[in-house]
Image (cartoon, rainbow, N blue to C red; front, side, top):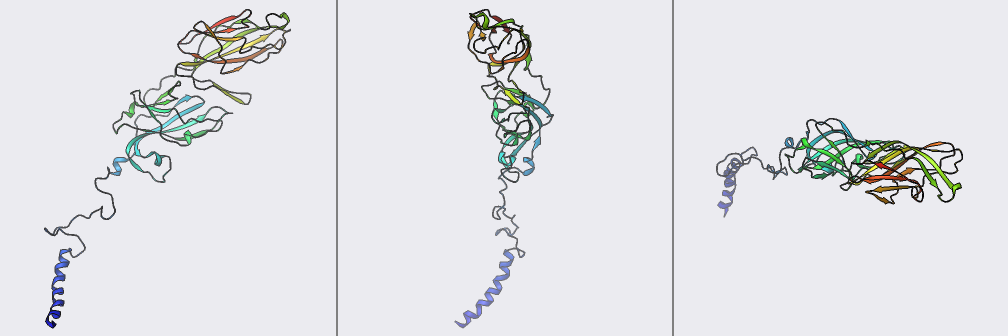
Length: 344
C-alpha cells in the first residue's frame, strides 16, 4: 500500500504536460484528432450565429434616387415630400419607440414629410388615408405614427415620416406615388420622382348668372323680395375650405364619385327691400339629371341683404361627377331661374 501512494505523485507529474499540450498550452482549443486550432464558437460566447441575418452594411438605409422636394394639397393640408429611403429598420425604431435603430427582416419605404395646416382657425388630423402605390394600383397603407400624423394646431407645421411595408427588396420604388385620401373618397396623388403633373382640381368653370330672382312670399306682394344675383366665380374641387371673419369653414373630402362645387355671387336689393335673403331650402334647389332634389349646401353664406346694398355670398354643394347638374333659384311656387353647372 505504501508503494501505491508513492507512485501517485509521479503519475500526476507525467500526465500534466500531456494535458497542457492537448489544451494548446496558451488557452486555444484544439481538435482532439488533428491537434489544429478550432475557431472560437460565437454561439457559445453569446454572440450572433453566423447565419442569423445579413451583415449590418447590407441593411443600411438606401436613399431613393430622383426624389426631389415637392408638395401636394389634400383637404386643408399641404404635404411636402423631403426625401425617401428603403430600409430594414423597424417602424418602432423609426418612430423612436426604441432608442436605437433596430433592423428587421422586412424592407420598408420611409418617406420624410413636412405637413402644414393651411387653416388659421381649425386643427388638422391627417392620420388615415395615407397610401403608397408602386405603379400596380395596389395601395399600401402607412404604418407610422409620428408628429406628421398627429394633431396639428391652426396654421402650424410638423415634420415626420410615413412608412410603407414593401412586398420585397426589389420593389419598384422608383415608380412610387404617394396617395392621400380614404378609399371611398377623392384621392390626391404625388409621384415621388419624375415629373409632377398639374392636379385636375380645383378647376374654374363657367356658370351663367340667374339675374333677377324672386324670393319671399309669392301670394303677398308686400312680402316679395326681388334680388339681383350675379355669379362672380365657380369652382369644382375635391374639397373646399377657407378662413373668414375669424372662423374656418370647410367641407369633407368629396366622395369617390362626387365633386364639390362652389358658387360665389353678388346679391343686390332695391331701396324698398326688407329682410331679403335666399332661403337654402325654399329658394335654392339642386337639379340632377332633370330631377329636383332637396340637397342642402355643405357650407353657405346667404344671409339678409340690407335694402339698397350688395353683399358677397357663396354656396357649396356636393354634386355627382357624372350627371347633368343645375341649380334652380327662387320660390318654386312662383317664377324660378335655372342655371346649368357643368361637371365632367
